[in-house]
Image (cartoon, rainbow, N blue to C red; front, side, top):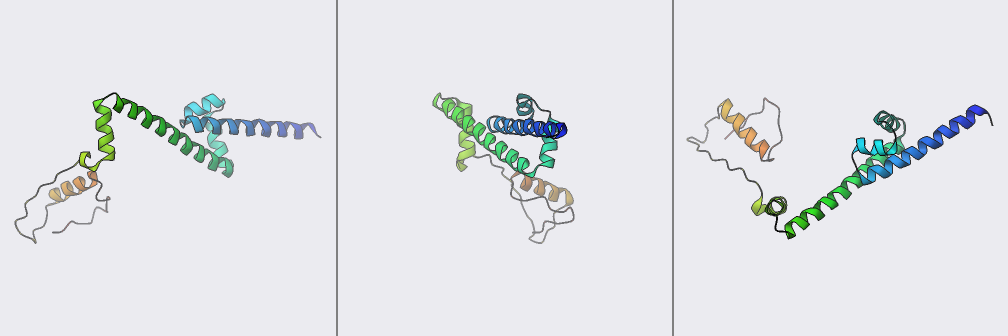
Length: 148
């Protein structure tokens, strides 16, 4: 074997090991800065590898999803422990997120004098913003109008 071939093989082997290491760290801690530091690589190397290696990109995305699921499980476990300890903020958070009766609500009250009355541009803007905040309507193009 030529010296250059051995050198290239060694570099690829090291890179392969670093890729495996970064994937392991992302599965445990899905924060790129922390995972790259622990794996001993730069963020630039990580992004370069993602760009050049489709398999690594897919594996990294899966590792991040797995890591996020782990953190979510740990967080929910801690939240349940706080609920058991009668921590009101934890109880409130759980109920708001898991029970429609306790969800944050927006109440919009209006009075229409005539059924064919048009909203003023200011009224239309307020209604659109209220709907956006309530997640009942997606932002539509600025030229769409609300009628009735």
